[in-house]
Length: 520
Image (cartoon, rainbow, N blue to C red; front, side):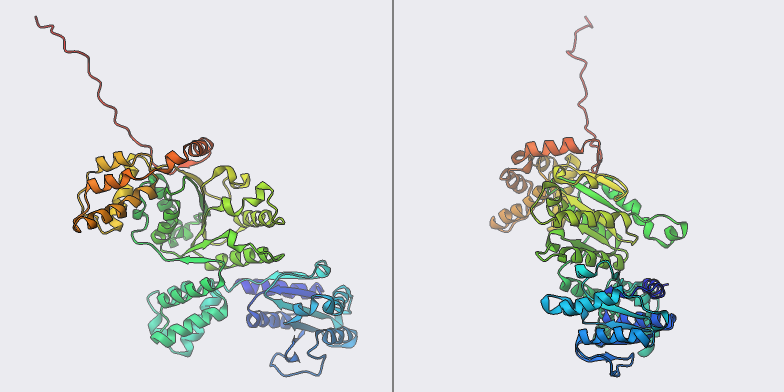
């Protein structure tokens, strides 16, 4: 059963329980109204619609001689109808705008009186407000049932696609998993957005191409300006030098998304927290993971969700969580969360916005049921809220330190490969000695510097000497912030797993001592 069918069944129960006013939060007016109508029919209610442009209409759009385009007059007509009229569910589309400010005081009072009224069962009337915003006036909070309507799930998106397949006779072109791929590509969009993506693919390619739908979906999500869609990077986890413990753990968890794991009942991984020194691979790991798992990467900037308007920040968070839940299998990346949530623990004068955001994120992490794998990153342990430091919300917490000897070489190889120099012969022992104490990003940065030097010197091939010379100009973070790094290491000890494999250091062989002349 689709999520919306479950919510519609609950709404029908609300009608039977005599909840006079329901406030549905959704941008999908037409889709929600279909479910409201079906719920009303299920409990034997008529359904009428009101908006500020047409006044009252029936389900077919025919105007009715009840009320007017004025919300107050229509509410007064509903109150009169409750005395001796037919049981009716009233869907009021534009009502929130009539409840604001001194001008809306009369309409607000009428709605509040109606919400508090006790109408005979035979004449029961219910008002359903459909609005993109969940900002219910304070006067109504005790009298209104708020319903956050979910985005269409996979079952509903599949129904939209199947309608198009039947209408345009695309059955033969949607075989061999192409239909399922097209459904997955549109999950996370509203019904209208999914229809638009499918329609554009049909117009351009005469078929529904999952790749084209995914590209259109990326554009739609970017338009919302609350989420960022990242393209996959080549090579996947192979692009990450070192961090072998972390990479192996991620590879082991990837099997949870296979059909065999579903049949076995293997629990889905919830996510992980990457904490450590800036420039040591946290961001690259997030990008590489989405490539390795062949799923979308969605970045959430909690700081960008904050708003100066009361309630707007919370609404943005609810919207983000709803989209993530609807997207299904994806990697969700919360970057540098300690900066975004710093006000929650440091007494920031932001009106409690940071504290509310922290509470919302923690609750969502604990209660969510979707297939999204959450990766949170942070640089400064001291600024993290203590609530984050436990399992349950995350499957594992990882500490990412400066790269060791093996990792320094792996990072340099990856950087050379990324710059088209995978086959260049380099003395890694010399370059490694020059990069002791470097972060991964500092090691990677010496490759472009060396290439510039080689190009300037007759466009020759880059050499070990070029890399060593480039490294000599770098003042690493381990020197400029050595005390801070040591403090972070001490706090991480015993609390996090180490992302890097333990370095094996070869000890020089001990000599027996001086050669003694004992033969004579």
